[in-house]
Image (cartoon, rainbow over all chains, first blue to last red):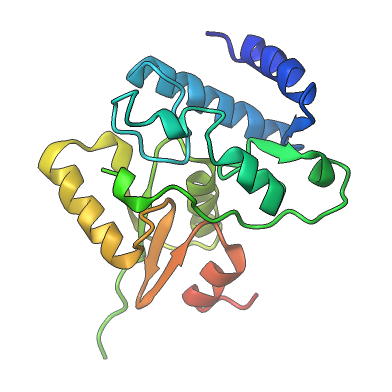
Length: 109
Length: 87
């Protein structure tokens, strides 16, 4: 899959929901390329900043967009890996901050 | 006086926060050891994950150990302080 195609498709679909790509475009493309790498090696777009185990069913919580994105956007204005930011952060209404890991550690092996 | 241990970074090859941490360490001219856990398998992977969970029960990445300090996430200020670099 081509990273530009992925970028354009996601930008359109996510902005329609009020979710934006990080303003750091280099970071966005780095993360999108990482998602493509994970798709190639695992068969699914596991979050670039989480350890996938290779079992799609087990890792369905971290398939991008992960299930933790919504609460992270709500609380911190960004998702764990930094790919997506909220309207508030996009409009500079809040400051960007470190996003701690929500995924239960027992899921990581 | 024991010599300071080299910082140890537990990372993922795909994680941008991990890349930022490596960049910071290089910019600070710090020699460090690192392991990319997503490239490991089997017993070696299990052993490393056990080590990480001892340092960081959340088992998230990056996790970096600098002497006795463990820093979870790319936190430039905390990393520099742990390295003894004025912030």
